[in-house]
Amino acid sequence: MSKSKKPWPSLPTDEAAEAFVEQADLSQYDWNAAEPVSYEFEKKAAALNMRIPQSLLDAVKAKAAAKGVPFTRYIRLLIEKDVARSS
Image 1 (spheres, rainbow, N blue to C red):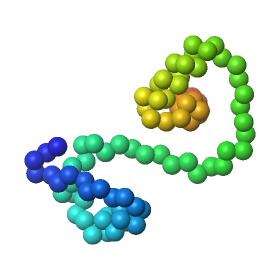
Image 2: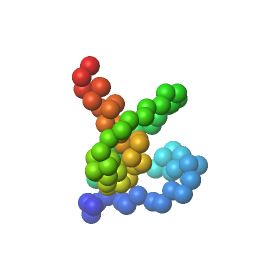
Image 3: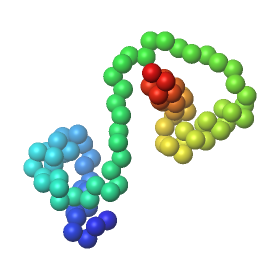
């Protein structure tokens, strides 16, 4: 963290975060640890069922756990990235 920047406060609720953002000068805070966040708005209406080797499923689950997401969401993210790249 830069010595001239303030650490981020703990914001336990959405209301606390909204109040903080309305009042704070965000340029005074350390953004080095900030990570992009994606939001899902589209309803999930279709299902996919596939058979894969157990070793592949184990590897996918380990990668998903390392990224802190459920493995089914991780698989969907991989598919979404590949489709977006191919377009």
